[in-house]
Length: 283
Length: 103
Image 1: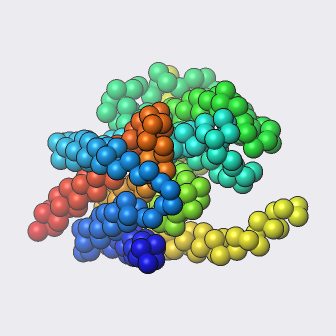
Image 2 (image 1 turned 180 degrees about the vertical axis):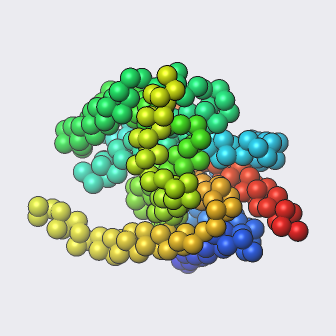
């Protein structure tokens, strides 16, 4: 009975996300769309608190304390921030969402590594992907914030042949993930931590050569990453609203990124690689 | 190879869900005016905070004496909650400003 109610609430939440996004892409209904998505998220979170889990200890005090703390921090920073600093604020929020996915994946992976919970090969792969994508979204968003806020100089964080370095790090990252995936269903924590460290590094390195003016496009792309990471985490918890919400943000975010590039008469590849060329010229 | 086919067979409905949600996401954003790019990005960012649900489930499933998992879960909830609440609030502020300009 209760589980059905929760599942129907999740369904309504997912529909609210989809209609909310649709309304947010039309000027006349944009505010209504944001409100609808907010309601969708609120009922989804509420339903999760009531979701029946057999033998669970619930620990509601921990959840409530953390929700109140996070809610207050989020709300105050959102209303205090100056209008001109909004894009970087979005970037910070996005990075923290990515960090949340990282914390989840790392905790679950550490449980898997000590054999407290067993993961199938498929689950292990999904956890590794959640960790990797979430970590890139986290550090990438933080660097994007730093650049927009004027804390980081584009030229100072860009190395010679930076695009080549990025390809090397990415190849190493994917190789490492594949190695962990193939080495059995109980990977060592050292390997997982190394994967985390390299993913965090790659996030920084990925954003480093991109010009400050192109940051909104990059934030949109990193936002899509966070969505995909949330969707992957949804697969682990077998949670439909996480999957649907995450995938929606993932695909909508990627299209939005492309549309934003088009509005600047550029291609996505041009933004991701071209920014580097500009920096070189400045030197 | 056999195991891949087995996985596809067992999760066929899930694969349908994934593919159609991807198409839906693409379609929803197809015709968005330039002025709405940033608010829409911000709204989508708030929705990506659904990951907080995973953190809530992590805490709910944790042992009450396992303080490490509880702390990490609580950290996840705080981070996710900042993403959700901050994201929606910032989007609302942007859109409010946009409405005023129009008038």
